[in-house]
Each structure stands twice: as C-alpha cells, then as structure tokens.
Length: 194
Image (cartoon, rainbow, N blue to C red; front, top):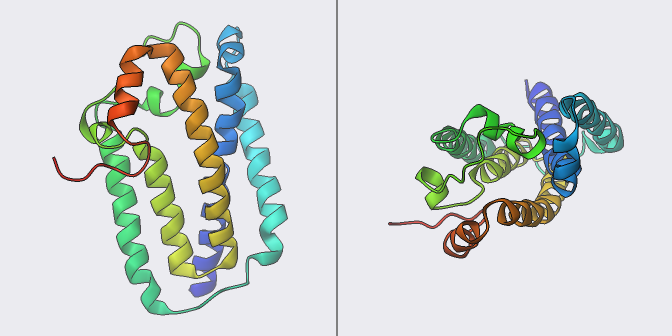
C-alpha cells in the first residue's frame, strides 16, 4: 500500500509542479494565443503533457528516496488535502470552469472578461494556486519522499514568478480596478478574519 501511495504522490507532484511552467507558455504570449484562429490548447495541452513526461523522467531516479516513512504523517497530510479541496471548492464559486481553465487568457473575444473579487478571492487573489500548494505539501508530508519536497519547492519558485506574470497581465486587462484589488488582497497567503 505504501509503495502505491508513494508512486501516486510522486506522479501527483510531477503534474502539479508543471502547472506554473504551463502558464509560462500562456501569460507572456497571451496576445499571440488570442490572435490564433485555432484553439491554442491544441499546442498547449500536448506541451504540458511533454512537461509531465520530462519531469517524470528527470525525477524518477529519486522517487524511492525518503526522508522518513511514518504512518502518522498521513494525519497532517489528510488535513492539508482537506484544506486544498476546500480551497478548490471555494475557488469555483463565482468563477466559471472556463475561467479556471484559462479560456479568457488564450481565446480572443471570450465573453468572460470579468474580475472576480468576492468570496475566497476577497481574502486571496490566487486561491487555486494555494490549493495546488496544499495538495503538493500533503503528498510531501504524507510520503516523506525527497522528490515530492523537491518538486514542491520547484513549484513554489516557478509559481512565484508565474503569479507576477499573471498579475501584470491582469493589470493590463483590468487597469486601476486590478491595481486597487492587488493592493488590498494578498496573492497567496490569505487574509484571515473579517
């Protein structure tokens, strides 16, 4: 059972760690993607799958190395999974699946060019990225695998760069409204309380 959980944790962290890299393909060239007559996802999704494969090949040699192997570590991991799932649930309120999938960023004339600042987004600008982080930390804490911690660290570094890029693009799209929102609401670590 532990071997399967370790394999699943490694593969989950491989996929999660490439999310910022996927968006590196989108945000710097959003105007280019919007100018295409065909769906940019015909290029972007295979490129992302290639990132998964490359990341798996690069990290496979470390997937059996663990810092620890304790059953009790799944207790805090389950808590982190729960927090991540709650964040995903809250993120989908007042935010369409099309927005979550990035359609406004890549498809010209997409009708959902709106800034959502209510719900969970009144406390944190990028709750989906925080949910991804919680899920990766859950797998890292639960499995104790070096590779999961390494992929989580990689995702944090690349995610920080990607969030800055996304903020610039949002500012270009929404102007002063987004600047005021960004000044008021933190990027990833939520405001607690009222």
